[in-house]
Image 1: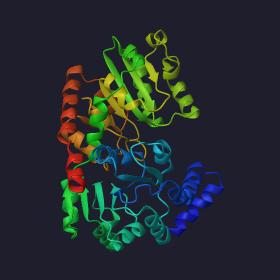
Image 2: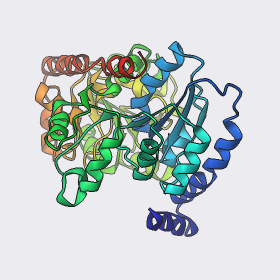
Image 3: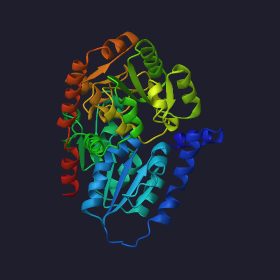
Image 4: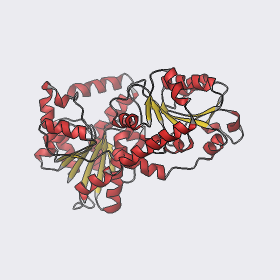
Length: 402
């Protein structure tokens, strides 16, 4: 951990933007907590929830919002590890304090818990910080892991990972996403485990019911038979889609790239030259003249999927795909690249018949060229899969706060 802190500090000195934000945010976290955790209600129950970044926050969010709704006097402290997650949600108003989690040294863990004094601690998905978990155990503070998922190749289950496996005994309960994770833990002697599911399904289901109406999208899709919604795309994804659009003049594309800085947008505009308009520059007139609408702002993607016939999720030609169920909830077939094996919901969508992985352009073209009836049937299977996974929030909440 000290070596990691040194590397982050060194990177921050050389101008690495994320490293600088992480280092300064972590260093200031304790002072921020001491300033903002004023004990106006010192006897109220206090819950500490820790997430890594945006994705894990979305898994915690249904629990947080139900807790706030049913127990408004409870104080909630939300911590992030990632600067991207913190910067996006630092003004989240359903909790009392949002801050970084100080680097996981024993000294920081003691200082953090002395300041926060939580009655319960909740870690989401992959967060397992030894210094904090050991100190929580030492203080007999009930600690839980929710929406967790485990695989055979994780360090817990390697011959050299026994100390990390024992670390799982610091949790009072571990709520996993699937039976495979539960069986793996039971096999290795971790018995305080329950299959509760993934709270993200409840979150995307709620988002879908509250999806915004977007006049530009309604105008853009009007009269078009096939509309592809491409979400969180990267350059390899965009090159495949540009090739398809070039050879299929009857198809429209809504493209929401993962990064919307000008350098990335410029590359996109070169790919779709003469066929696109930016969302922020769209009008009811110029939308009729193009086949590609580039979403150059954030916060719309979860509402955009409703306007398409088929979804393409980016990231699968890089480190891994982005959120597939955000599209599947709208009853759409979902396509993504080859790097999906570590994403349970993507594997399950393929098994259900509503998800498809592609390795190259010919495979993408084959799936996109299927008939509307085939796409509708596949979309129904996607929606049915999401429906079958609902309820994790209820199960976890009842165990922790019911």
